Length: 418
Image (cartoon, rainbow, N blue to C red; front, side, top):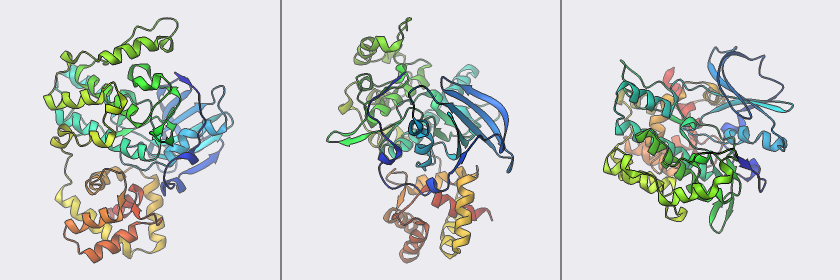
């Protein structure tokens, strides 16, 4: 459901444009000449999603085609592509290029082999595999790490649900669905809102989302970053119960006419008796589904919860760690031409996720970027002299914004593959 309010543009996003935004290519016309259609992955009210093959590289990618709905101007049609173009985080689906073709837009993005998060959880349940809390915690933690970054840009997703959390890779091995820890990416920012900053922080004013996972305040035409936190609570509840926390029988008038019923259910809370997981996991889920928005934790605060800190992320192997650190250190010795080439490759290749663990390890404040002091401290902590660490951090700051973005970091890490 969607009804409009104040118009915002990508220029209203917080912070400087990312370096990635300068390397995402924009085209006129259709993408048919460059991509071969392989498989229809999904279809919605506004368009379709296909798996495609890049004719030039052979890489599998995804093409999302959106047909202009009534009432959308050019700016609104291109908004999702432009938002994604300005986001650069290991747990947000990457965009490579987009094509404007009259009343439609075609967005080329990375392909996720693992499928939808909740579909994988359900498959494991059908096979009799218990959902490991460490696996579940990794999924929730990575989603919140992405949300901290998204919210720092002044953007609220507004449609977080199981279908919009994808696994970059298959986690199955020897018949066990949960054999490998997941790499989650947030996708589908089609109804994301760039919010206005006021005395109460970031606020949006559009009623939009999926009714079953919409926060109470969204129904009244007011939302903020904590509205996404509520939606993550719905996802977490469903992961452990195979049921949504709130369900309303939708009649012919549709869910929008039943706002009072939804909010009444929200105020009462879900049936906590069916949530079968540890006390720590239950504690987090209950906090995420706090009815009063101002009492609900932020994404950053949620990351500090005992359950997420107790089930820590998978560590980088010592061999990979040494190779990647060595590559990062040699970045400062590369010529401008070599650096530009690595940045272009990193912006368009589909293999950089292997560097995500080290980036997240260095990102101690979960901001989604490595500011200069943070990067220097991380390099010093692994035995590099402070002077060399400072020089390396300066070299990694390609666009001069006193931080190292994910693209800049992965471009340097690519040198470990030489």
